[in-house]
Image (cartoon, rainbow, N blue to C red; front, side):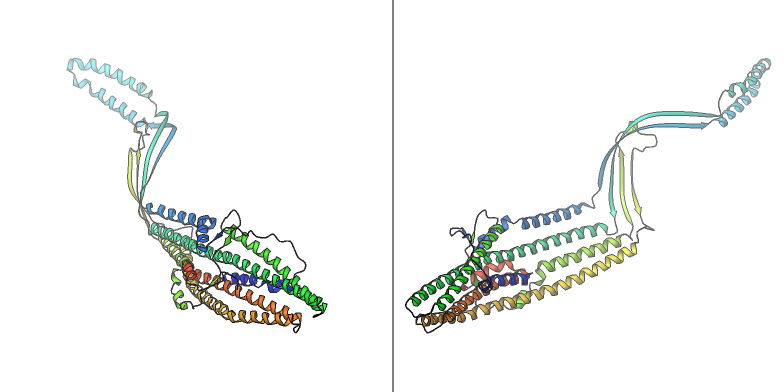
Length: 503
């Protein structure tokens, strides 16, 4: 991504080299406002942090992960529920009484048989006659009693209950869930940090890209003004007979090309200004006040930046992903272990309770899965494979980030050296143009030499702008890759070469 950004930046900065020979016809271009408010890079950074929806969204994601992790802290607490049931029921009972009936008849018959002997001899005959008659009636009396007795009742019951269940031992499942939730917070925070770093790289690209567009527009305007002067001088020389009309035409063609380049640069400036305003959510046009810069001193050794690898969002995210996979292994293993729960229930309306309903109940349940429809062995193997994959991915991420830091450091150093080498090129190009102007005015040099000198100077200026922009963008990329992007302002303050005014 960083390499693509730099290529885009260099391509934009070198646009003039392509525009001049290929543009055809002038266009009306809306001029940017000269009085557009200018903001420093620090002010732009503060506004970006305050207005960026992307950064705000990442903050919400982190907060959501933290709240979910907090929610798992209470998994070991009891779960208490209250419920209420309105029950309408009917109950039919059937009791076999044939045995007790026969027993009662036999006992009564025995009693009557023995009863006369309990009276005096004079009365035994009379009592015997009575008991004999009563005994003869017993079969008819007991025969009225059925073999079974049925009872049926119907009622409506309101039953409120309070129940509680608390895990005692889950085989490590609760700890695995909590560890996974904590690791998910780490992933969210790493993503947030990565998004923040990328937002700052994007700000550097857009903010200083607007400066590039302004510098290129200024350069092409100066080139156009210079060709206007050359054309005016050429016309005067032709009028005085010093040069032929063909040389005037050559200058005219170069001047028209400069006009097209200038109008194209103004379009690029307007686009860059609009991009900066949109990035910072500014209602109107806005311009960059902090110029392109280069720190002529080399950067600290690349090992200084590599030492920050473990703190980078990519590596932190990879480590957090490994922790999630490790928690998945613990969760898979917990399915092989028993689980124990304490439970209890209380009936809050005993008056209308069913006969079989207890007033309260409490106990402990131990559960162990002997067989499962879901293959626990393969589940554990899959979790172990995910853990190994996460470990390999984390190791690869460390290598990749280290490589990114080294490449970015080299790009910064290349841009720094290129910018410093262009100082002598710029001086030589300016002197060459001065000599060609004098020679052309004296009629000693062809107009093509003057045009070439102007083109060389414009190209050198453009390359210098591109080198400064490449340095700033590569520096932002290096600091983002090593998660030290907050130090960008420090390097900016230490810069001793600034393109405040186009040279």
